[in-house]
Length: 294
Image (tube, rainbow, N blue to C red; front, side, top):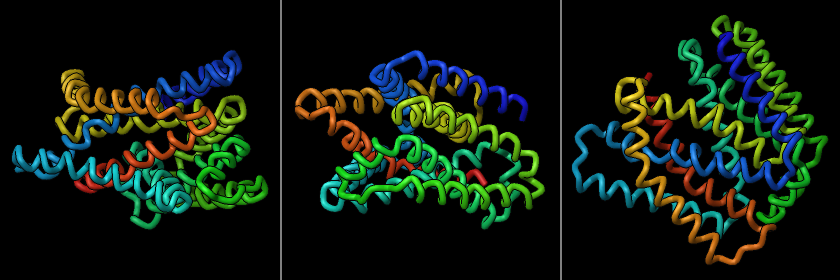
């Protein structure tokens, strides 16, 4: 637990300092660099996880699985085109669960929790996380929401959600003997994250959480699941296997950016759409992975 606390203090301190030193544009550049590197890599081995789950999958089945996966991504994009408001809300709800699941999964003792307490912990963590991001970047968030035809969020509503869900989450930690020792670490985490969200842009704030408190932990779990070990050799194999999909994703993004003639004002909605489209199949794969690890 001490190592976790030190790591959290170090990461947040570094990026709070960076956000104080850099302009908004440079903060966003750092954020995009993190998401487009480690962020993409952490989802680039989904097909390998599917293969591990299936065990006896043939080469033809792998080929078919790849196109099925891409098909789900395109369905997500069509979903955003046809019903953007519902699609964005769905994406946020799925992300709340996905981020909360990874966070709780990283604490080995929580695997002893009853399923109802586990779900409450997962959902509460995700809601608190997104509420902090939204309330301290409310103007930017409302501009994004408006582009998806969603009404404005109010500060009062977000404050109420934050207080209510925090009470629920802390109560869950207090009444569970497995989580009591985890309370200080969680309070510290959210306090530091709150200060980061105050000092940084939405992109940098999100990317710091996404990379250091989600993607890296997810990669660690994926490597162990696929190769049975977290040693350096397994990590190298994981990174090598991810490279073709990582490069394809980068090429697609570069081509799209160069030929689509999008305005800067449209950049955030497009990023959310792209992230959502690749998140939907990824969440399904990771959920199945964690179920098989129980």
